[in-house]
Length: 628
Image 1: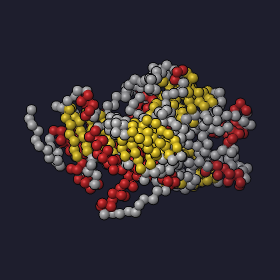
Image 2: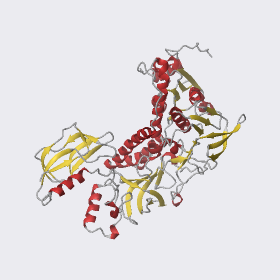
Image 3: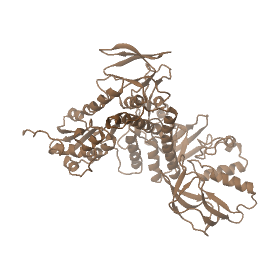
Image 4: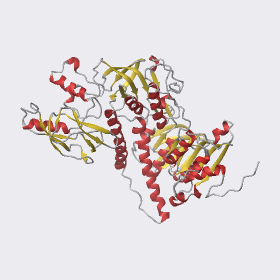
């Protein structure tokens, strides 16, 4: 009886794949497990293995076709013995099982071995599967897509070359790079799915919501341009679903890349028993051990919650709680005027909340260039209900009417009531309760693991990357460190020596900077030339009606070498890449000014700022400089 071979799930969240290559033709005889095709998705390419031996009777697809999961690829006439004796119902059951989504992670040979153990009677000593895999007695009742990653039973030991502890933007790129280098790699993440804080509760979901906030603001502003919309109607359920769909799509891609690159994925909490052994524990109490030659610690960070604000009321939120969008409060207090507080304040203000920001220092975004902060502060002053600088929250108190906050400053000493409070006063590294005391790694008083330029710790078997290895706590910095750590581990002359780590605040307008700020240059006693190009002189900014922006260039006096760049304005986060390239490669202002930039674009503001260092920008006049 002929068998229809169908496309199985390639990665979580992916419902179709493109046929990139077909490696068999009709009439060919194939073996079980032979690669017959290669498919591509948005995230990865994958080999498709046919589990049936026999003759290819018909190929149902062509190169370039987009095939849904469950779509028929081949019709196979089974080899002698395969399929013989099977009833029609058994054949249908086999076909249904073939269409069942395959797990995103794990080794197929291990899954086959698990099936063999079931058929052999499943001895009690073999009853438990790997971290992330359910007990065989539970498999019949569990989802067919339950994880099945490795083959170490309870109390047994799995051995790998490299284990990466943490599945965030520092961890999974390190695991992928190690796999590319040919190492036997395991990725351990306490979360149900890889991606870390950035993907699940940080960068990605917040930017999805900020995009919605921007649309709402633009809909209001368009009335000035002659286009009027009605008042926006907010469907919180759909908004949450949009945020979640973005996250799920990316999570599925990461899990699919783990599988395609042969990275073993463990869903468990890992703690060090010693410098070469991790204890793995799942929430259900299951434990196993993982032995390794090298471990890369990439456990990230979590929101700080000072005890004074931790009053045991769910109306007091950290950034994770705020991203859940529990409701649209009438009044929201944001404690902390850093990038997290301002970004989430922007979202809630767009949804209709009256937002009050309290910042202890004299300005929003402490540490950012004041020239860049000024246009943002002005715009936020129009969007927010109130911004209190040089002010502290002396305490919070829960009442039936809301959360009462005591605000104190030289000019303010009063209590105000809010429906919700967002505490955004920073993050702390996830280095506690990891068993690091059982290793030689050194942890600072602030909780960071000490590392050198190769990301090596004081323990020869341990490296550390990302937030847990020190500031700045940025996802892209973690990703770069993860790759450097693996390159150094492979014996390459690699060090983390980047001098232009970009920082971006995704408010509206956006802020972005890299390299030295003007204030830092002065603190270091460096003589610099500074030029500020206002976006009011940009044709593209005029067409967008976003002329509040500014592009600022800091260059070394005499050589004109670019030391830093800062931008405030629409799309600043995209524009800053040119500054990073210039600073990292020691370009001078004339290099940037001499490169033709497309017109009309906001990138021209970078070119004209560079022109201003040694001459006069085309679209901006300034009096001639006095000769010294």
